[in-house]
Image (tube, rainbow over all chains, first blue to last red; front, side):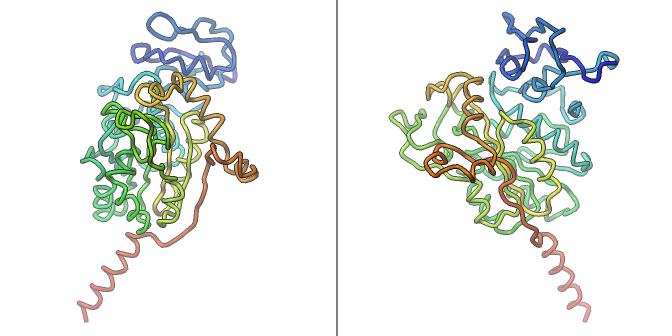
Length: 68
Length: 274
C-alpha cells in the first residue's frame, strides 16, 4: 500500500480554472483544460497535498487508492 | 493526510460566489482544518460574519451561524458570548467590515479581551462592491475611489490589535495554508481575544487594477513579502519596509472578559442574599 495518496477531482463542477493548483504542485500532474483543471499525469503525483490545501474551491482531494 | 472538511460545509450552498483565484476559499478551508485539529465541538461553535466578500463565509459553513449587519459581526458575537460563555465564537470579517465600519468594535473587543476568535480576511480592497479603497489598501495603490492613487496610510492591524489589548495576535496568508492551519488550531485553543489577519489575494478587483497579475502572481508576491516573524526580526531595517511578519506574533495569558463578568454576577448575588 502506498503511504501517500493521489490527487482526485472530488468536485469537478466547482472548479473555476484559477490555476492555483498548477502553481503549487511540485511536480507535473495538473493541467488547465478548456473549462476546468484536468489530472493530466496522475502517475507523477507524489501526494504532497499542496493542491488540496490551496484549492480555493474544494475541488481537489488527495486520497489513497484503497479509500476511493 | 490533511483533514477532510466536508462535514463542516453546507454543500447545498456551494460552489461559493467568490471569484476565480480569490484566496478566501483557501483561508476558509484552513480555518476548518485548524478547527478540526482543535478538537472543539462543532455543535457548540457559532460562526458570525458581517458584510462583504468575507461575510459570505458563514453561509457556507455548517455551524450555528449568523450573517449580520455591516461592521457589526463583533458586536453580535459579543452578545452571543456574553449570553452563553460556553460557546466557541468565531468572527469572520474583512478589511472593510472589520477595519473600517467595524474598526471601533474591533478595538474595544480587544480592549475587553473577550474570548472571540476574530479572523479578518484582508484582501486590501472592498471587493464585493467592485473595488473601493479600504483602510488596508496600501498607500499609492489604485482603487475605483482612488484612481490616481490612495493617499491614506493603511493600518498595521496586528500591531493595532496588540496595543488595544488582544491576547493572541497572528498573521498568515493564503499562500501558506499549512501555517494558517497551525495558527488557527492554536488560536481556537486560546482563551481571550484572538485576532488573526489572513492576507488573501483579490485578483479581480485589486490585482487587476494594480497590475499585480493574476492569482498565481499575487501568491508569489505573498511568498516574497510575508515572511516568518523570526526571519523578519533579523532583517536590516531597509529590507523590512516592504515586508510583513507572519506567524503567531504575540500571545499572553490574561483574565478573560466573560469570566470577570461572572465574578460580578456572583458578587451581586451574594450581596443580594445578605
